[in-house]
Image (tube, rainbow, N blue to C red):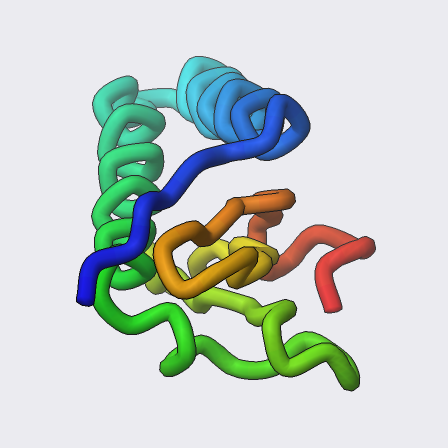
Amino acid sequence: MSFRVRLTREAADDLDRLFDFVLQRELAREGGDLALAEQAIAAIRAGFETLRTSPFTCRKAGQNAFLRELIIPFGHSGYVALVEIKSATDVVVIAVRHQLEDDCH
């Protein structure tokens, strides 16, 4: 079985925000790695590939069995994507956060 994965506008905005954050952080560091922002987004998108075949392997996010959190490792921490399994063929990424963000639970 293969699921179609799509992002909400908010999740797409999250990817832009996360890219900009890493880029700005690396620009501010002496000898910063400007490719790191692209690598972070590539890691997140690679994580989304898991959703195509096995979204139910993601941990539950609350009482709703169809609301899940995908953990995406990157560097010393990583990212968390909140996803909803909408049907037997569709998964929606609702939001993406860095694991160290305050509102990431």
